[in-house]
Structures are given as structure tokens and as C-alpha cells.
Length: 223
Image (tube, rainbow, N blue to C red; front, side, top):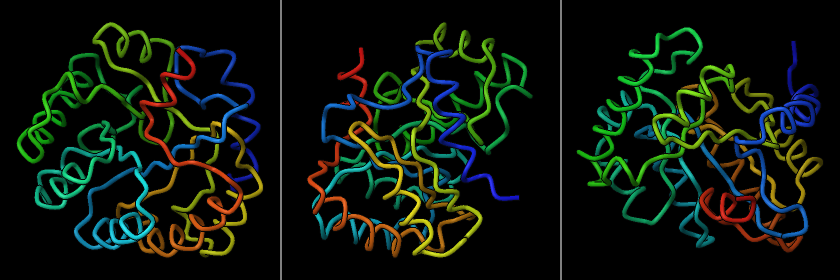
């Protein structure tokens, strides 16, 4: 079952219900955020970085702690380039299925992996995107209690199902708007196409006048 048509509807429903999450930035702005989940990956992230370098744009990465520990050198390359870094849990377990202590441990273990690879202090890595976009009000309450900032999305092209580069790009171009928060993947699921998708997508977005910013900039616009 294709989920891609449902995500814009979910976004419109969930955004007003959970306003303390970051769903998008200012719609009157041409600033958008390109984000990548599930990395870092030794092959896919490396290829992606070359594309981002070529266009001199910054993106935000939401990492799995286990992947950071497997590829600390790639993680350091991302950090050294000034890209944004956030948390995606240690091993992609759905947050609502974890106990509060297990969730806290997953996030802190991921922060420790990032510190070891990139020397970023835990207080510098506060943005969190729940795996699969799954959360509950209790999940959000815990994240706020622990001083994390939940980051969601406004454009989800379902790239992890590998529908093809042109389809993913078309879905994004149909949905993108000022302040859009775009989700792609540079991990095991979806990462095979991520560099090519980005290579095709970025010049078209630049041609439309969009400016790529970090997730932190979108937070500043809305809060």
C-alpha cells in the first residue's frame, strides 16, 4: 500500500493538534529544510555529501546511534561540514513501544555516540525525530521534560519504498512550499537513491527561489 498520498493529509491534521512539534517553518518565507533520516551510512551518506558540497547547501541529519558507532568517520565528516545533527533513537525502535527509561537511554546513548564521533555536547544535539513518525502525547511530554525538541515533517515522499528517483522528486515538487520540512533517507532503507534524488531535486528547488536552511532556523521562525 502506498502511503505517500496520505502524508499531506496527516500533516494538516496533526500540525494543529501538536503545535509544540516542529512541522514546518514560515509559509511566507522561501526557506526550506532538507533532512535525512537513518544514517550515517558509509556509502549512501558519503555520496550524498558530495552532492551537498557541490551545491554548497546545508542539510539536517537525524541519526541512529548504532549507525554513528559503526561509521564514526562519516559522522565526523557531516559534523565538520556544518550540517545539522539530530537524534532518531539508537536503533530505530518506535518510541511509544519503549518504556520511559528505555527511551531516555536510547536518546542519551545516541548523544554519546555523536559526542565520541563529532565532539558535540549533548545540549548541542536536542532535535529529535521519532522513528516512523510515531509518537503519543506521553512521548512528547517526556521529550519536553528532558529538554528535547520534537521535529516532524511537512513533505514525506516515501523514498524508503524505492519508487524511483523521478517519482520521489515529483512528489516533493508537488508538495513543497515556503517553510517546508522535507524528509529523505540516507540509511539502509531508501539510501540507495538518495544522492541521485538530491542531485536532481536541488537545482530545481534553487531555480524556484528556495533557500536551504537548517532545522534550527525553522525553529527560530516559529518559536
